[in-house]
Each structure stands twice: as structure tokens, then as C-alpha cells.
Image (cartoon, rainbow, N blue to C red; front, side, top):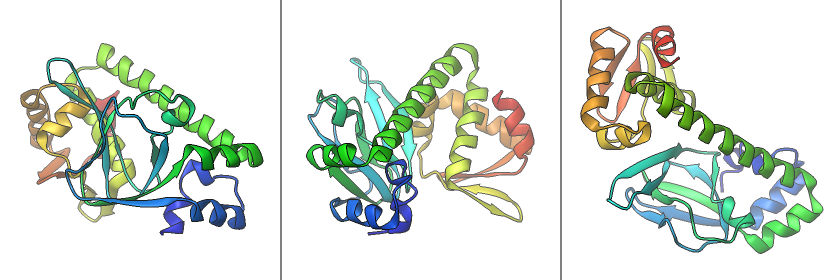
Length: 225
């Protein structure tokens, strides 16, 4: 278990080392291969997950088969917490973007921690509030922002979590296909590819397989507004 990664999760914020180690000891490890589904939208479930290695995508599928990606999560990020408070069906499908590892905690174990450690409850409330804020931002972007603006904002978000600074720019190895990136911004693959090609032509970024190198961060930030 990667305790350093687990400590990045909001669930562990405010816990001392002894309490964090005790909570981590009650978690169960799950490993997935790239493309493997952890759970489907509509499945029952009562476990919270923390990514410790790799990337997971959360998505939904419409009645006509169209897919929309709601989030790409990496090490230290949590998901599945809604099922702990609302025992209804899963609201998304969780799929491994890369080979990945996770630690999970069930409802019964978490309830004990919520009763004995108020910091855990506050951390989960913070997580839910952040999710609601992100949902509001996504809705606003779909209404008020054009596709190139949404693409720029998505790349900046991915760079803040998966980017690596180098002499020639910020390398963002997002591991997403062109179709997945389009699903993330809620647009067609052709429109997103056109926006990426335009950014590359302007010298703002360089396109590489399942990754980009951001060359002009300031211009990309301006375009995302």
C-alpha cells in the first residue's frame, strides 16, 4: 500500500499518523487492467475508492448510446463516496484508463470512522461540495463556453494533475484517446480535433500520442476563459 498517496486523499486529511495507518489497514486493494470496468452505472455498491496508481475515468451513457466522461482521476483522488450516503445505484461507470491500483473502504467500516473521527466526516463533506462545484462549472461551460474554450480548460485541468514540467514545456500524458477527450468536453471528436490542431498551429501546444506538450500556458489559460 502506498501510504504517501493515500495521505493525499481528503479522507485522510486531519488524521494523525496512527489514525491514518489504522484506517489504511482496513482498506482493501483492487487492481484493474487498462479498459477493465470496476462497476457500471446502475450497479449497486457501498464502497469508496481511492486511486493509488494509474488513472480511472467516470462516465455516463445516454439512452441512445452516447457517452460522456465526467472525470479523469489519478493517484490520491477518491470516487464512489455517494453510495456510502445514498445506497441507490451507482451514478457512473468506472473504467480503468491505464493499469491501475485502488484502495477501497466499505460502508460499515466508514460509519465507525465517521462516528469516532469528525475530521473524516468533514473531509467527505468537502469532497461532496467540490463535486457539486465542479458539476456547476461543467454546466456553465456547456452553456457559455465554446468547444475550443472547453478543450483548453480540460487540458489545463489535466496538466494541473498529470503534468510534468520540462525544458520544452509541460508534458501532459493524459492517456486518453481522441474520442475520450471529446467525451470529456462534451463535443464531437472532429470538433475537438479541429480545436487541438488550431492550438498546435498557433504554437500553444504540441500533440503527441495520448498526450500533449503545453508550450504557451498563458495563451491556453486566456483561451479557457
